Image (cartoon, rainbow, N blue to C red):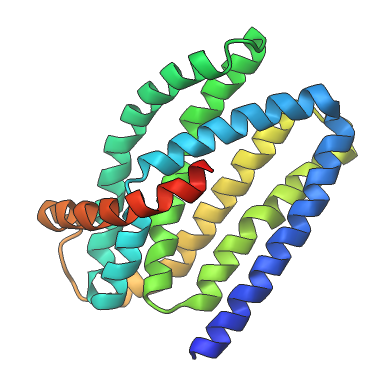
Length: 229
């Protein structure tokens, strides 16, 4: 089982890197140096805010699901509560950070970054929390299908932009958001059967959520250095 999961994960990683190479070339080709720079600035800063703000809950969810699979309902309910709290707080932090980081860019780029920030955060966080639970349950095929869905759906969105001859920074950001939405729908669809058959526990357990945050945050601190690098 572990060997099969390792091969699936390795194959998925190769697929992600290969598709990323294709989309990277397309974006650089059609946006040009200036547009590619604007896109990178928006995506990198928003992604960093989302990563720093998840407080390690993906790691905590994976651990909790592996230790007690019957908690899956509570993990999903707590994940929604966590996102509802994190979302507005991270938007405020993001607005301050983007104002400083993108001060040299045009007003249009700054506005695109704000819209992208507000829409990306809940999609990304919910997907991470749900897919981490799948990983903890040992559903490696489903876990990696979700990981692969992001670049595949992004490539689809990029291809539509090329076909429609409307390749812009705003269009690429929209394609990115589409890929995150499609991935969230996929992971929730994969988890739904497990949730239906899970032990009937409360959807929300704030005590367990606090415990998971403490565990996740301790793991999060250790992973920040390579990310910031």
